[in-house]
Every structure is written in structure tokens, then in C-alpha cells.
Image (cartoon, rainbow, N blue to C red; front, side):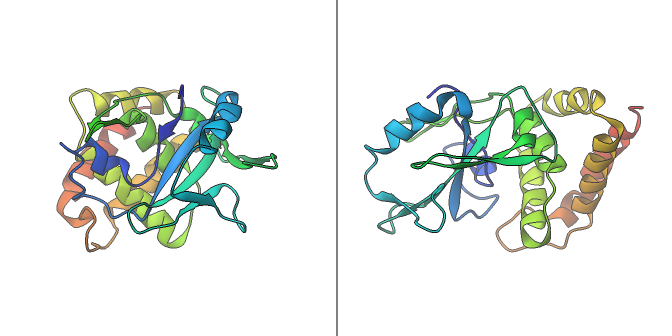
Length: 214
């Protein structure tokens, strides 16, 4: 469906050949839904088998068997980033929490995983979104490690694309990005996730390049 993308911590896995799932442990899948196609997504969900809407969180669909994983639906307005803002898109059937920062996402690769085409954001835009989003605690650490997982799968030119996107940010957002990248370099290692300690030099080189942008 046009504009819908997988945007969560499973993205680095999907970027590996065959969806190898060696970089980041994920227990659910996050789907960014452009508000322009909300009605179409809602209609499509009526035909989905094996998932049911969660009563406490109607934007979350939970599996009815161990063969599936939870799906979280997030709202986005492509091309209209309102960094740090969020609001509820009310709907009786599929309400969405719309995160303004998701507006920085741009379409990227569409890998074929066992016959299923999975639409992903560009790696530069997803790294940008993760580095600009205000989170705390375990979620904050995991999202920063997702950025490292993305960096480990970068193709030539992806890092340059991040620098180009960073150059047009407001100064406050630019410093937020750099502060979060610095925090990533200091994170302790976690089982099943990329090891920040093994890639501190690489993160430092990226910070140095970002620091040249004024």
C-alpha cells in the first residue's frame, strides 16, 4: 500500500541478505501509516487473519498464535516533519498516535523476504528519525542500537545522505542528533544487539564529519 513502511528495530535485520536477523532482537513490527491511506489500511486489516486488535491499545494488533508477532500501527505525515510533536488521530476502528518526527522518513529499499516485498525507509532517513526522537530508558537505548545496526548495513552514499539531511536541520535538532550519537558510542553491550564498544571509532568518525557542518 502506497507509503506504508516498516520502521521499527527489525529494519536492520531486513536489510541483511535474506532477512538474517542477526543484528537486533525485536518482538514486534512497527508500521508507519501515512494518514492519506489510513482508510485503505483500515479496510485491508478487516481481511487479516491471525491478528486481532488489542482492546487496551487499539493501534496494536496482537497475534493469536506463536507463528506471528505483534503489529504496532503508527501515524505519519510524509514530508511534513514536526520534530518532537505528537498527536492522536482519532478513529473508532484504527486510531493512531501520529509522531511528527516520522515525517522525515523517505521510501527506501523494498527487499523480497521469502516472497514478501517489505517496504522500508531509506537508511539515512530512518537513522535521522531515531536520532531525533525523544525517548528514555530501555526504549532509548534500543533505538540508538538500531541506529548502529543501520550503520552496519549502510551502502556507499548512505552516510553522505545522512549528512545532507542533518545540514538542513534547525541548530537545536542538529545538536540533539549529535548528542544522541555520542550517547550511542557510550552504551554498554547487550546480548543479541550490535556492540557499541566494537564500533566506537566508526561512530566517532561520523560525529567528526557531522561536526564540520555549521
